Image (cartoon, rainbow over all chains, first blue to last red; front, side, top):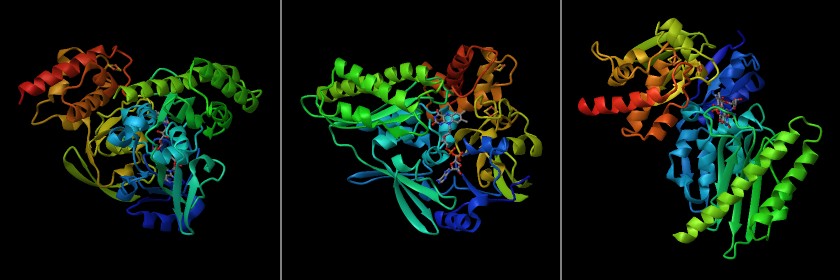
Length: 288
Length: 157
Ligand SMILES: Cc1cc2nc3c(=O)[nH]c(=O)nc-3n(C[C@H](O)[C@H](O)[C@H](O)COP(=O)(O)OP(=O)(O)OC[C@H]3O[C@@H](n4cnc5c(N)ncnc54)[C@H](O)[C@@H]3O)c2cc1C
Ligand code: FES
Ligand code: FES
């Protein structure tokens, strides 16, 4: 057995101290839904394990005039049950709602979803589309990193993610999300897209950020599609063109991969679902 | 070894556990509560479902030391003064139990659902037990059992 010591972390301060002391040999455990399997299969063999799942300060959801802040220990269930994530933030609700099973959502946290670094982490594309930043803490101090850069500018072994924060969308912006497949309880998503799109009164796209999961090595912005969509009036022809644009960027990115032909087809339905949901929510908003 | 204390089925336990022990192993091997089953060991099947601090979790994905200070309910704790819980009675009465392997987890998911939402729709029931796989039945019996349990629990009031 390689695991020598375990700690029930009581405060962020204590955990940062422990990480500073043990660094490389230590691992954090939050909901455990990713890491317990890795420990069992000896994919990772830390000497020290620090539980952060009972630290109250990591479990807060805060809202002020302009921003929403999620503590890294907030679970998918806590997001789903919070009325903040309805209305134009429905895409975040939907992404969390489609994670795993009730048991997985009760334990799995947004911080663990980000930190685990999977390209198919469902919580990440909606947060990237919202322009979220994460805040980390270590004995060296705090860092704020745009979530979309997180996969390049990785977490250091002595850092803990404290929170993830994003600006509230404007009233004309809507966040949508779609993931491949039937909502089968336990299928880990292989493909997902989230988009935050602002439409003006004429239905012209004034602002657009689109993020994908599992279309590359990590969740990322789809800038070519964004560039195509900006200032266009959304209709069927534009949706088709946007899909072609995305497929072309994928051809480039996934050249030679055996999954490409499948992903090319699959992506068309999930981008379409995003854009059709946008049109539908806009009609609903107008009906109010 | 690490010393932890936890409440299981309303009884306080002070135990010394190995650092790498999972909660399911603590419950089954150390506390002898073998009603909790291990199917996949990977969070997929829900056979190991317990209620921890009010919510269902897969006990194969929780480390034993993380349960320090927690309040846990396993299938053994559903029985009160020699009587099984109305949910269990309903499962028996509608014939929802075949081999029985999935049932402890299924019953606890049903309890957690009804605690939160005493009158779930069929769709909500289906969703509530969606993290529990059964190889024998077609889930319709579980939905029926849950509806019957709702009746029993109303009558019991
Ligand atoms: C059956 C099953 C189905 C699943 N389905 C989905 C799905 O549909 N979609 C999906 O996206 N995921 C899914 N997952 C994966 C998993 O549930 C999520 O990634 C979850 O968000 C992980 O969070 P956690 O708190 O459980 O992380 P943990 O397992 O506790 O930790 C994961 C990693 O993150 C690190 N970490 C955790 N918190 C922090 C922090 N605050 N700061 C720094 N590092 C940290 C840990 O050290 C570890 O390396 C599934 C998993 C299972 C077992
Ligand atoms: S044994 Fe835990 S989910 Fe299958
Ligand atoms: S009754 Fe046999 S697995 Fe469900």
